[in-house]
Length: 482
Image (cartoon, rainbow, N blue to C red; front, side, top):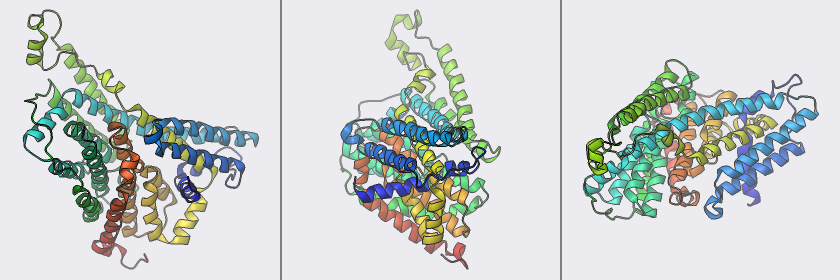
């Protein structure tokens, strides 16, 4: 890795470490120890850079991305805890790491429920049925590229960009089969569209939720980002569409019928999303609680499917074919098998990243970074950089950092920060939860370097969306320096 790349990732590490830094000021009776110029800080940064380099090289090393960051997280916190304990602050690191674990637990449980529903719908042949219907409709791969992109853009504001991307990727995987080029381009398009769609809705992305719940931007003001978000997706989508093979998918394989209970499972998934949004918006509870409540819906319905399953002895004259025709499945529904099939590598990767950046934040680099960005560079360049940083790490800790710093900005600048944090992560596959999840779901076809190849056109859409925001939302900047 070049010196420039190392310095750039170092800056990223500095900027995303807010949660730990905020805690460090109050951790232990003796306060915070400044480790920014200490050997422990330098070693921790080096560990993180090496770990992330291995994540980026997953396509070549074939070592799953969770492994290096899990090790890095443990090493960073061990170093920090040892330094603090040596200075008599035996519980400071413990308090900080528990906070980071709580951050991960909320994300983990949210993702686990989403993945479980996706697996349940896949097992009930929802996506295979959709694939057959789309194929038999006579659409080319290029038209399917646009259909999945449009659906991702307009579903993500209602649900969220992660679950939307998982849904659309499952459809693309079913349609594309072994066409690696189509699956790769379609997944890139889905990530960009889902992230862009979530940026203009108060509950379309975790970052917009955080800004809304803080009371900084009111509910309806977010929808002023619709046009900039659409531009962000359409610019790269138009360019990429010319590279999509204009071929027909495999011929129809016959009629496919969804298994018993498939429609109910889909309805329960929608109800789960509504529950999560309602818990967060009206009860001021974490969305994760709504998602886990929704998992109970699926568990109870799975119990019903299992109890009413009649493919055992004496059913349909011991003829499994007739039983399948009558009930739509030959194996009883088992919810725990759906949970077991979750993308555990992705979930462990998020644990490692959150703990790594939390440790780097606890070391104390954030104050230095905020001084450089919002005071030295100015508000607009700083908010544009927020999006660039979101391309390397998840946008949630980046936006949380901005919200905790809470710089004095106009509504237009807060909208800009929301836009860039929401769509900036599209520039790299590891920059958003949607991209990371799809790398796991479409392993071997949608990869970090496959996405990186199209980063220039995605960056073009990023720049265009910022320009359009200043153009169409200029009234939110009136009287306030940019």
